[in-house]
Length: 138
Image 1 (cartoon, rainbow, N blue to C red):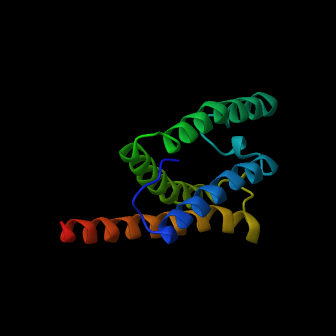
Image 2 (tube, rainbow, N blue to C red; image 1 turned 120 degrees about the vertical axis):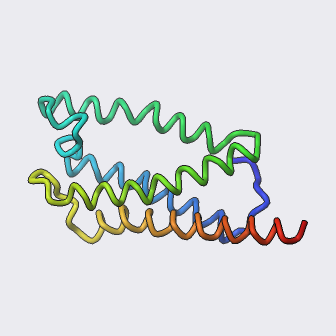
């Protein structure tokens, strides 16, 4: 990642938020998340699993490329939008929690999902307050 002018706690918050999301994707494999998602739930289970896994390759490549840009403004944009996604992602999990195939019910699964959202929200609030302070100092 390009080094952004941000406090260490904010960078660490973001990195833990993304780490929780990536680990959630590992956990999602044990919960057959493709059986819940509207884009894959209509497919036969083996095909849904293959599509779910395969689509994550370009998604992860895009995210990692965005986060490792040499342009600090691109990295800042990536951190903002990924953090916003983490909050939306948790809301989607909550919305799908009544689906008959939804099995993310344990402490580990919920910590990964909602912990990433909480840290994403902290990042968003923290980055806003940091940019507000930076703007005031100019």
